[in-house]
Length: 364
Ligand code: DP6
View 1 (tube, helix red, strand yellow):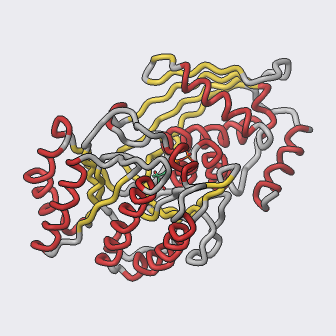
View 2 (cartoon, rainbow, N blue to C red):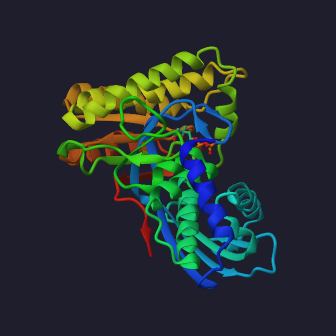
View 3 (cartoon, rainbow, N blue to C red):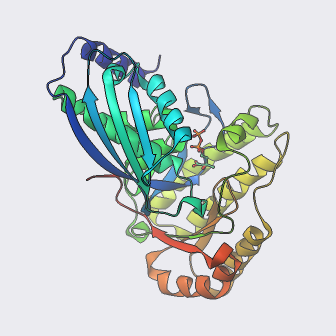
């Protein structure tokens, strides 16, 4: 068993001997989505990443989750009702139910608790923005908060535990529990990094404050190939080992670049990572392609604009067709004008979501 997990299992053994100080209540947490600059793609059992990743925490794209809870020692498995924007969602209720089973070993009180969970996203449901990072982190933060209320304990490792538990729900969610920039996964580039939880990235140059992310919605709606399937295909991808080594090399460069304020190299690494991620999809067996013609058109336009204007702007991609245009505060005016003129017409229903680096989750 890994070190932090061992600590949580020991804590759980103590909790099993305790009676809750309080039995009922409600908590509400708002947690953001994040966009990876160095990508997590490939994992081992129990959500251990094949390489370390680095992300920006977003500001506007958040999930808000309210959890009403009632501890009742006579029940022996968690009772759960779940609604999303006021509508009961059976598929997500089942997913949360399985999730609670998985993390019961760290939170033994879960099985004696009734939950009513109400969740909402600030970003449109069908925008194609990944919601598992914000949803799973908001839930994990809420559960950690409930544990403190029930047992009147002040958890010194609150965010590490929340990150660990978020990871069990969705790997990328581990990075959403901190503001600004996060690192998840063991890497020589970052002291205190861990495969078990994310940590806030070390100091950043002032030029990186207020980084912008304008999301071009090239295609909304459900993903054609899920991330779990994509991660799974990395097990047999002939380039996987090289990819994991390249990601670590990018991590090492990126951490220096962010501290030194080298915006040009930041953009090079970010675009290399985005294209490498999609190259992994194309070279998997079966291979697949999530970029659409307008994804490629947007990439060309961004690169051309950068060359002609000299502005620090670049792109990254998630596991989908949408394009994240990443740029710096000082060029925001010109870049947004370029987005309006050249990129918005490439988007589905001309939909662009302007976001930026944010301060992380908030208890409401
Ligand atoms: C392409 O975190 O969605 O967004 O751990 O299976 O839930 P699971 O996968 P998920 O994978 C995200 C992959 C990515 C890159 C990234 O966010 O690092």
